[in-house]
Length: 159
Image (cartoon, rainbow, N blue to C red; front, side, top):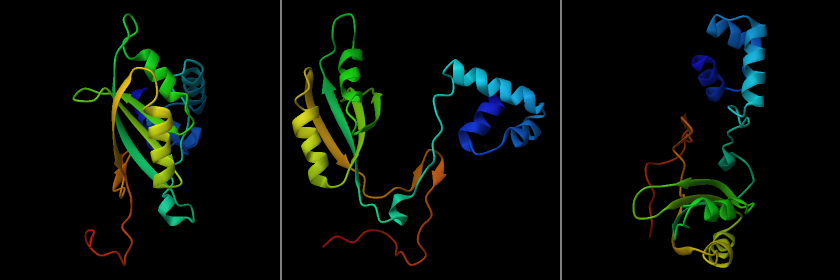
């Protein structure tokens, strides 16, 4: 069954028939397993990975490290619940190290991301500090390597 989940995670467009063949299962078994996993929230959703750089959409992605004061009896849960309610937040992780949480957001511009950090995130109760890092280029995400344009030269040049 783990093989079936891994195949779905790698390519959720595979049909039940294809998955059954790859796992040496009956198609009805595959459909039943998937339905049970969706019902039990083992499978939380399906996601298409898009290379937005190949579209006319311009956006900025930022990784924001957040220091918080944990709450007695709730740890980081209460503040995490407040932060993930913002529609700008794509991902939120509890981390080890100098910062407690890692927030991934996207916006239309640097200014939009900065406004989110300064007006919403940094002013959230129990947030004691932030450090924002902007994603300059994606090389690999969720196990998928982003193709390099044929005419792209090596590296970045800043002047």
